Image (cartoon, rainbow, N blue to C red):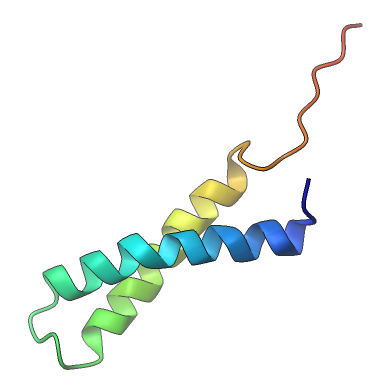
Length: 64
């Protein structure tokens, strides 16, 4: 499994795709700075959710 820094980077990269889609879709002026701010916020939210999930974690269940 990758280190936490690599996992965090992958989660943010995957968060950029929905972030850009929502940013340019819901911004009132797609040529301004607002779409990039919306994209960054959505990317951090999606990336944080993926980082907190069990995705790419080494979660071995040991019997006690």
